[in-house]
Each structure stands twice: as C-alpha cells, then as structure tokens.
Length: 162
Image (cartoon, rainbow, N blue to C red; front, side, top):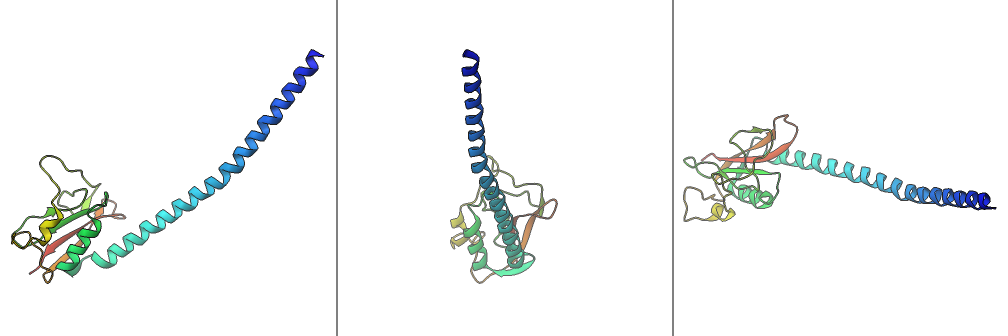
C-alpha cells in the first residue's frame, strides 16, 4: 500500500506540474507577441522621427524662430545633440541633454563634464547677449548630426548665415 500511495502522489505531482507549465505558457505566449509588436512600433516611430528630422533639418535654411522651437522641443531628449552658432563670430553652444564633438558624424553622443557644460535654453532669447542671441528673423543653416554609420540621426546643428 505504501508504494501505491507514493505512485499516486508522484502522479498528482506530475499533473500539477503540467498544469502549472500550461498556465505559464498561456501567459507567456501572448506577452511575447505583445513585446514583438511593441518593438515593431518603436522601430516604426524611430524611422518616422528620422524621416521627419531629415525633411525639416537636413541641409535646410531655417529661421531663428525654427531654431528656438527645435531647441525647446528636443533639449530634454537624452539622445539628441543640439548645437547652435547664434552669430557668425560666436562659438557653437551645446543645448541638448548630451553633447557633440563638433563633427557632423559621431559614434555616440557624449556626456557633459567639468570643461563642457550644457548651455541654458534662455540664452537663445536673451537679447542682452548679442553674441548668443537668436533673432527670430535671422537665417540659419540646419544640418543633421548622424551616427558614424549614417543611419541614425543623433542631433541637429544650426549655423548663422546672415
């Protein structure tokens, strides 16, 4: 009788194990599909963003108000470099959450350190600073900063034309 009880207990244990595995599979399979779908949506959004940035800023002439708007829109984005040369005699100032190295091709965005600090966004509209002030009517050349492979947009550079 002792062996029969052990056999029944083993059988019940196997049955419960199979039920648990089946329940886990019922939960995991839809979750995997949702993850794949979400990944596809993120990739589509990234492609859409790159297409939009290319259409709006890739080697285009834009107004100062567009420069200010772009900086305000992307300055908190942790993957977007924003460089602005407000006047012909000024240096490029970094407004993004990450910085570039002065080139239009870069392996990855750089972080700020003690010698490179993020410029406050208010500098763009501060008319008391003629060197770094961006007048809304001024013309700027917009260029995209891309990854070294060229397939990913990681920033925008604005250079004063007039």
